[in-house]
Image (cartoon, rainbow, N blue to C red):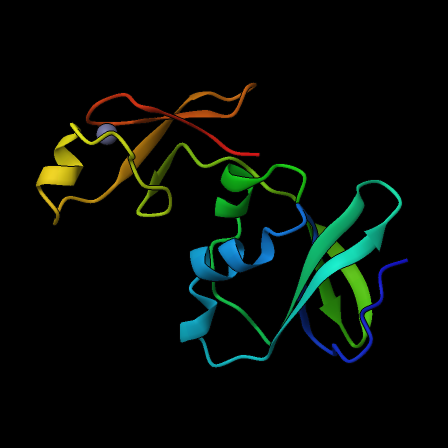
Length: 141
Ligand SMILES: [Zn+2]
């Protein structure tokens, strides 16, 4: 059972791959937000052995679907009045902008620094994204 003690209202991002919490912290730009965040690393998990968890207090206006791009095993619990009231189902967005970065050194985005890093979902079943400029492949966990 997920321990949500100390969290009155907010979300719990659960089943993050061990070691993945800091990456998600950065992807969601949580350091720029004025909310209380708790990161739990290497929590015990029956399903995964170990996992990371992030608890975020407050009403958030962030696009959680990007998390599905990074790691499809992530689950998101919505907390109200100290209880889990629902789950946010992650849906893969058709395009993601400035979340994942193209790593191809010959891609135009590595030359033209001001260009947005844009990826398009090309295979929903296998969760494959491709850079719109050079078609480099990205696949999350
Ligand atoms: Zn590219």
